[in-house]
Image 1 (cartoon, helix red, strand yellow):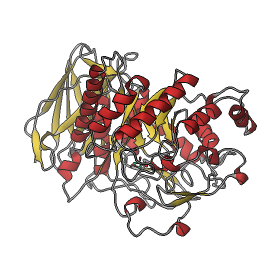
Image 2 (tube, protein in one colour):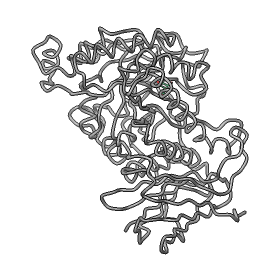
Image 3 (cartoon, rainbow, N blue to C red):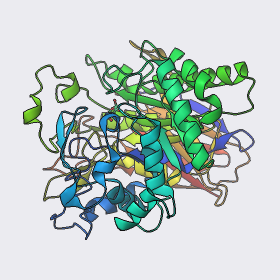
Image 4 (cartoon, rainbow, N blue to C red):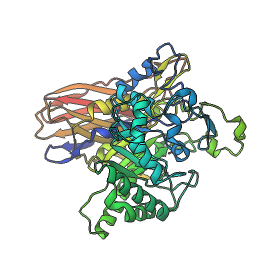
Length: 509
Ligand code: AHR
C-alpha cells in the first residue's frame, strides 16, 4: 500500500523555535544492575584503563555524543550516602540498596565518576539524596566536590587524590519524590519546602549553581501538575529547571499507539511549561523556569524490575550488579526513540536539558558482556545522529498530510518531524519519522531563504523485519542505510520515507 498524499512542510530561517542547548543530548548513569559495574567500570577487563574504566565503552560513549551525564540515580540516590563512595577503596562499606534490592560495593563513587565524565567530555549532573537525607548532607557534598581547599571536606577530597575542585555546576534536588516507590517519598508541600531550603543554602555557597527541582515521575501520576504547581510555589525563585521523566512501551500489541508515543511527550512538555508559567505569573516573577527532561526512553517494565516484583528475594540474597532492565531494542523501538528525540528538539525553547536513561546495559544504547564485547543497540543510531547533526537552531516545522487513527491518541499524523539549521555551515538537517507500519510516506519540503543546493545524505533506520535487533550473537544486524531517490531541486526537497522508519536528511548550501 502507498500513501497517495505526501506530507509537506515549509522551512524558513525567519521562523525559528530556539537554539538547541547542547545539554539536550545528555544521558544517565545510575548504580543499577550493570550500568556501572561491568558496564562503564570493570577493572580486569582486557580494555580497562588504569582507573578500571572500560575503554571500549568510553569509545562508544564518545561516538554516541553524550553532552551531560546524570549520576548516581535515579531511585538509587534516594538511599545513597555519597561519603561511602570516596576515599580508599578497601575501606569503603558494602551497603544494601533498597531501590534495586541489590548489594552496593561502593568500589565506584564520586571520584571515579568525575574521571569518567572527563574522559567522555561530558558535563556532570549530580543528583542529591533528598529522600533519606537533607540540606546538611547536600552542603557537605557541595563543599567536598567544589570548594578549592582549606576546609575539612575540601582537604579530604585533596587527600583522596583530587586536589583540583570538580566544579560541578548542575545539581538535581532529589529524584522522583512524588513516587510512592521512592525511598523517602514526600508530599508536594514537604518536598517543595525541602527543595527550596536546599537550594537556598547551596546558593549561599555558590550563587552560580544550576538547580533542577523534581517534577512528576510521568504525566499519568495522579498528582501530576498539582505537584509541579505546589513545588514551584515554594521553590520558583530558587531553581532553574523542573524535571520530567517518561518511559514508553508497546502494550497489548498496539503498535500504532506505541509509534505515536511522542504525542504524550509533547503534551507532557506543553503542560509542564503551562504550569511553570502559571506559577511564575501568580508570583509576579520575571524568572523563567525551564525543563530538564532528565529521564526518557523506551522501557519494557516487566517482571525483571525488583521494585515491582512481589516475590523479590530477602535482603540477605540481594546480589551485586545483577542483570536488571537489560532491554534489547528492536528497530520499532529505535523509531519510537527517534520520535522522542524529535519531540525534545521541537521544544528546544523550553527543554534545556534531557538525559537518555540510561547509558550502558540498563535500558541503554550500549550493551556489554562482562569480560567480553561492547556493542551498539538499535537506539544508539538515532541518538548519535541527533547529537551530531541536531546542534544549531530548531526551525519551526508544521507538517500537513495524512493521518491515521490510534487507540490511545486518536487521529495522529503519520509524519513526525523537526529540522535544525547549523548557522556556521548553513547546513540544515531534517529528522523525520514515518509512523505507518507498512506504507511508505512521500515527503515534500519547501525550503525558503536557506540557499541549499545539495543532499549530503539521507540516512534511514528501517528494516524488512521491524523486530530485528542487535544481540550478543549478532552485534551488527541493524544499522542505518542510505535512502533512495531523495532530490533537491530549487526550493523543493522530495523524499520517500520507508514504512516505520527514522530518517536523517542532511542538506548543504
Ligand atoms: O531509569 C530507571 C528508573 O526509572 C530510575 O531509577 C527512576 O528514577 C525511574 O523510575
